Length: 228
Image 1 (cartoon, rainbow, N blue to C red):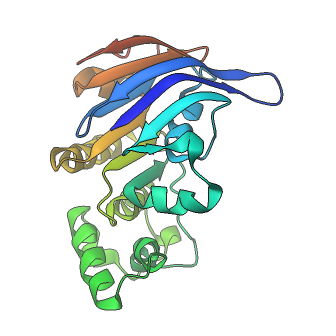
Image 2 (cartoon, rainbow, N blue to C red; image 1 turned 60 degrees about the vertical axis):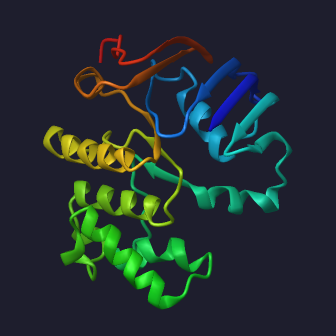
């Protein structure tokens, strides 16, 4: 589903955030991306949804060569990719329902279909009863659930989660992980950058460790491997 071949990313300030990345990720996998701060984890995942472009090399996602993708084609790529951020990135003036519906409105789904799908995913994340609330009226965990609902409302093949539990307390973090596991069991590929040692070591999945822009470890059912 995802393949990187000899990917290098060098920023204008001289920092090399990706230094010859080679990896294959299959449909339906759940992968943790770990490593010290500044190791290149964010660049690694941002290149998968064309937030960043590699300096050289090849990146294939869902059969699309991202290195040949024109800027105007990027929104179409992202229809099949859900992204969950550490800071939620909800639109503050929109209700829970409107935040999730927005992802369907931009691709011009019918209002009737939007309502059904939004209510289905809000039910899945346990927030059907809070559809009219604004993000500021929700807890951090609830905001992250809205963010996850928004990321899966298009039925994407891939969900990329960048530190999704980073701003949450431990109990809420486990709830979010349970939700991501449920999404993964339905066939969605999940790639999750995290510093949460306990989660990685408890809920076993493939672990890809990045240091200085290189993949230094790639293990099925791996350990976190760093002091957190």
